[in-house]
Image (tube, rainbow, N blue to C red; front, side, top):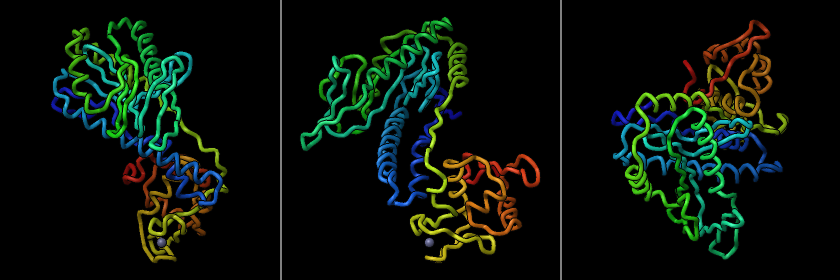
Length: 330
Ligand SMILES: [Zn+2]
């Protein structure tokens, strides 16, 4: 939990979405001629742009100073009582209101057709694209929290807004409620909410709601349906654009093409394995996937990584932590 000025509590920081990590892992390990390569290239570019846009919006919270104690949750995910998921770009909990924000990164001009529930983008060349309605999305999230707060007997008003993270977007015809505006307007929007509402929650009640939100946090797990045989195996050389499999020699990973030696290349490779195949690996699986021939060498490499293990002897599994790239849990 991060504190800023004693009043801003970031309960959930914004991490790259798992779908983006998966797409990038696939792009390292699929042949460019694979039928899904261009699909994952587009997906990665789109998710990366969306993530950057969300981070641009997040920075604006630092300049918002007129809120009393408040909690921010970035990329909050949960499941409702019917088992359906909610994915919310930003949640702001204050003593006066709960604000649900959807962040859109769409270039060109966008207009909304309220009767058709359709967001339409007009491109520079005059062509059109249609997007799912962000209004329906945030209203649906709001209805979920209304049900939750009714049940918990919490009289907290719920507000929704849609923010454009792309300054070049031309926001055309839009409904008046929820508002759709450029991120530069966030401060003014928050000011308006703060002056429109009175405090209805004590610090203890806010604390209770924040605990409820965190206890209900549940992320969807995106799955990859690509057979393992389609993936390029091995510890791959970053310098060679992940096209060349490195060999383990004298305590480090070496590329036979460019000659680079990189001890840390194994971290990226294990992270790919975690994302695409399994979050645990046996000695045998390690040898098969990373091209190490000797059981003894594989044991030595795995031991040096200091990964937590479960099971014994041949059944021993080494657990690959989510933060392996940052150096793992050791
Ligand atoms: Zn290389």
